[in-house]
Length: 208
Image 1: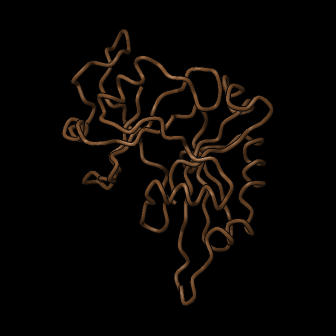
Image 2: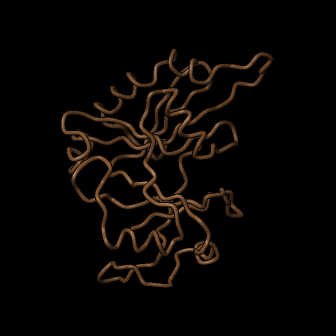
C-alpha cells in the first residue's frame, strides 16, 4: 500500500527565526483555498503507522516501506488489529471477487516511542487513526470515525472548523492538547470537501 503523502506546511518560514511569513503560502492551492472551510485535527507527536489488510492477513508499516516500527508499538498493534477484528470490521460482501486493499493511516505515540511521548500516555504506547483508504477511495471524516468505532480506536480529534487564516491564528495563540494539560503539537488541516492536486496528492496542510 502506498505510503501517506507528505503534508506541507501552510506558510513559508523565515530562515533564521523559523516563524511563518504571513501571506507566503507554501502551495498555490493554499492561497486559492484560504477562505473555504477546512477541518483541522490535532497533530500528534509520534511516528507514522500504516495498518494494511488484504482480506486475509494484517501487516504493518511505517512512514515508508523501509521504516522500522519500535518493538513496543509493533506488539501493541498486533493486539489491536487481529485478523478476527479486521474481518468483523470489513466483512467481504457476497459476490465480491476482488480482494479490497484497505489501509488505515495513523500515529503511534507514547512513552516508549520518542521523547515527550509520556505526555500522551505515561505507561505504554497507543495508536490514533487519522485516515482510511479502501482501494482507490479515501473515506470522508464520518467514514473514518465509523472505522474507528468498529475497531474501538481513537480518531484524531477535530479542534477547529474554519479558514486557513483562522487555523494559523488558533495555533499562534497556542492551545492545550486533547490528551492532557500540555501544549498541542499543532493542527493538520484539510478542506471540508476533499480536493486533490494534479499528481493525485490530497490538499492538506500542517500548522505549525
